[in-house]
Image (cartoon, rainbow, N blue to C red):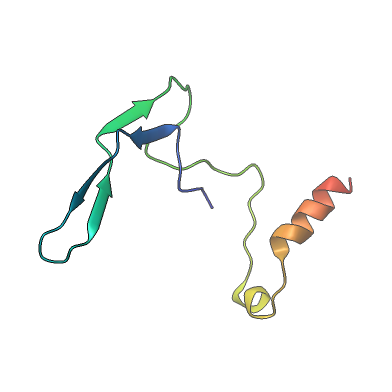
Length: 75
C-alpha cells in the first residue's frame, strides 16, 4: 500500500476564523515540488516490500509487518 505523501509539499500557511462556527481554518497557499524522475506527483510512495494482512491476522493481532521485517533482517 502506498503512503499518503509525495515529493510535493505545501506551506505558506494562513489561518482564518470561520464566523458562524468560530472554528479556525488552517490552509496552505503555496506548493513546492522538487525535480524527481520516474515518480508520480499525484501518487504516494510505494513500498519496496508489500504486505497484505488478512482480516483474520488483524483480528488475532498478528503483526505481519513486524514478521516480514524480522524475516528480511534475519537474512
